[in-house]
Amino acid sequence: MPLFPSPQTLTPSTPLTWYFLLLALVAAERLAELATARRNAAWSLARGGREYGRGHYPAIVALHVALLAGCAAEAAHRSFLPALGWPALAVVVAAQGLRWWCVLSLGPRWNTRVIVVPGLPLVAAGPYRLLRHPNYAAVVLEGLALPLVHTAWVTALVFTLLNALLLRVRIRCENTALTYARTADPLLGLVR
Image 1 (cartoon, rainbow, N blue to C red):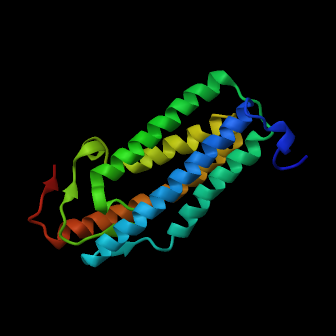
Image 2 (spheres, rainbow, N blue to C red):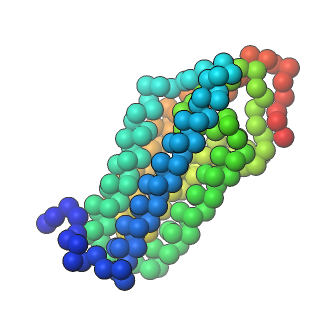
Image 3 (cartoon, rainbow, N blue to C red):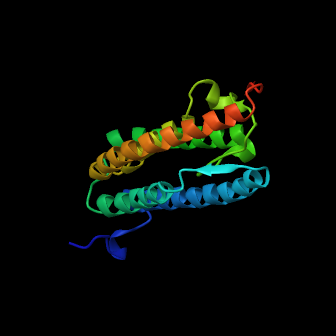
């Protein structure tokens, strides 16, 4: 059985075609994130920013690439179930909205890497009023829902488990970085 479907089975009206388009859009969104992160990293580093967690960053990138590849490979052999697919799509859209709310709330301080500028106050605006790490909530939601849009439950399960392991490392790293940012100038409060 081939890993991906033949071009003859992909017609504009098949759910799989639309799902592959969704995956392409998510991949394009990831590229936009990376471009934003690169620009923001330059901003932070120019202001004395310090990067944390370089060692685990390649694993995060690899896991997100594997998510998209796993979705495509598994969905090619699964049926679209509307009762699962449409609600999952709504969750994917909500996760994207939350992710970009995070990006906009942090402005040039948002990054896919953990980079903090010493002395800058913590941001407590936008979704950061409600959650300490809202971007990771978006990642968890998307990682579970994106595969389920086209019934790729194995990919959803494997990504969710591996992502949980990586997020334990990542959140610990980010908390250390945020502590460093706060203690660099303890007189600074939260940005509202």
